Amino acid sequence: MVLLLLGIGVVFADQVFKYLVESYLYLGQSIPVIPNIFHITLLRNPGAIFGVMPNGRWFFIGITIVSLAVMALLMQEIPRGKNFMRVGLTLIIAGALGNLIDRLRFGYVIDFLDVGFWPVFNIADMALVIGAVFFIYEYLMYSFKKE
Image (cartoon, rainbow, N blue to C red; front, side, top):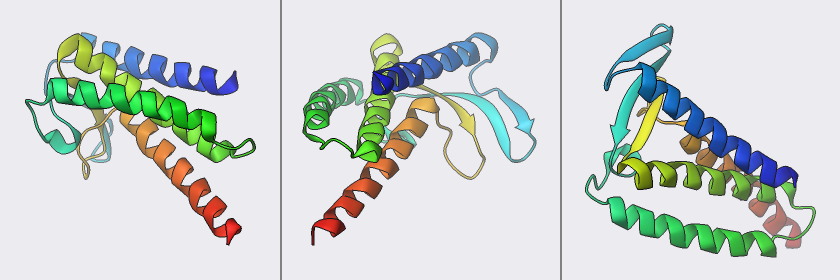
């Protein structure tokens, strides 16, 4: 139940902030939160990470749906007590869903978190990355303990 609430919370926060940014900023507008460090910048990414394959909307939708199905099955196979793996996979699923909703609704993903030295991203992207770190961390720890 806690993981379900976590996943719903991430998707909800991602969609609410994307809605707010789209409602109050124009495309390309940047508002400094911490000048020269962190800005809110509205961008639309029709492709994947770093704008790769800008015309791949349906490809990315298909890959995401298949990946979500595989991850849902994988979640059932994670041994009890592997909480980092469970939280990680929950965050990955929630992040994938957040960006899938954008692709289905708009044909692009809304990005708005701008730290200057990295491409602009969103809450769903953060969930994907943090989830992957959690999952890989426990996977590696679990794998090394078996030896």
